[in-house]
Image 1 (tube, one colour):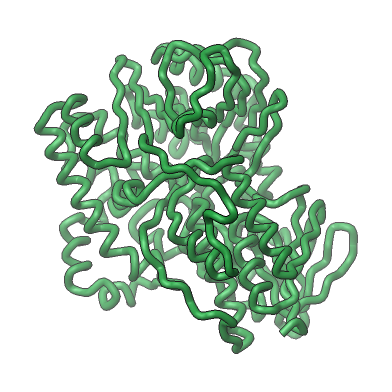
Image 2 (cartoon, one colour; image 1 turned 45 degrees about the horizontal axis):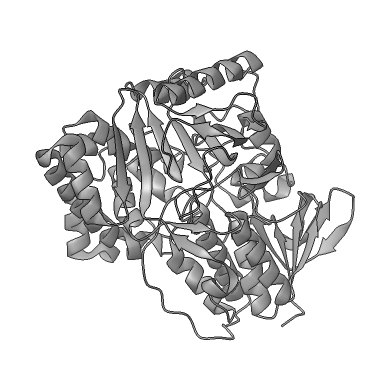
Length: 511
């Protein structure tokens, strides 16, 4: 089969998985990547001599990775060391209250009862049951489907699935649905944050996103060597299957001949021939013509609203005063103002929520009290990195406000610690045409779920992978898009698998 040459543009998660599976099928595969290594948004920064995960920080949906590794004759455990996390996340409010959610549902139920009372604990239990039913209804018809459409959904859902969604009210917003479940505003705020896993506002995201509550109960793990170890592992396996990698090699144009793909032109002027191309980048780059005007029709011409961007601080710092776990969220009282600022006023939030990933904690790895530890601090931001609205003064003010919240909640971070700040402008440079949007389009409105394109495109020989296409953003979902792109390439070649399909079991996560 090696006479078929596939070029994969981008070594992000979707590109790595598609390259691995296509090379396994015997195709000649070349991955071209503008940066100096694999990972895409799954990136690591060296800060003060410490390697810090500075993109996605959570390993979930392990069933899809089990399937990927098994499909090339190995196992997840043989390639990576992963450790289950007993605490899913630790949550703090500026009034001094805090709540842990656990992998063990019984522990979470008891914690909510202590935090908000027995009646709210019962409501929490009812909410989890609704989330479970929502997940069960959508997992097969939507999440696993390569190209779900609105017209197909009723038949795919069946009577039970339709009933579950009608009980939920799929056209309601997540915020509205949570108001039907919880009386304590902090509980509503906590679970509303699921919308941000898709780069969206809880006031605009569909109620179906509550399924992430069930998703997280399926397991959260820490990866030894960080999430970047997963990207390195996939790249290593793809090379072992025969895929070639050209790092530091930006693609300038996707070439067509007689209306179908025939190769790519690199930034240095070199041309590579291919009869199939997998584009693993944000579809905005195609829509805006960054890879040539001829491939603009590959994606819908109308651009949906951009998802969230972020301001992040990768730090190697000594902390004190607060018992962090691996994943920590710090809330303010007025949650709505954050999204009014970002999606309404188009500015950095004046009262941001702050996420802190303490990367040496949570799996029996707590650092000594005086040891510097690796932190990634993140606040949501508008995807305006290609404009001139995010000024240095606004960034400094956001930083001051964010770290003041941490201090008020009891977390002290040693001043002048080695730090690298990344802004929407930086993310826009890393991921062109996005404005710094990290999740593709925003998931606003219940129809938005059907707006993401699938792997095949109207241009013969061109396929899509990554977080801006179906099934959506996040490491596991992008990996699934890579599988779907590889399957679409194989189908276009009228070729079949060399090995039998692997049975799928388990759950998924949007993180």
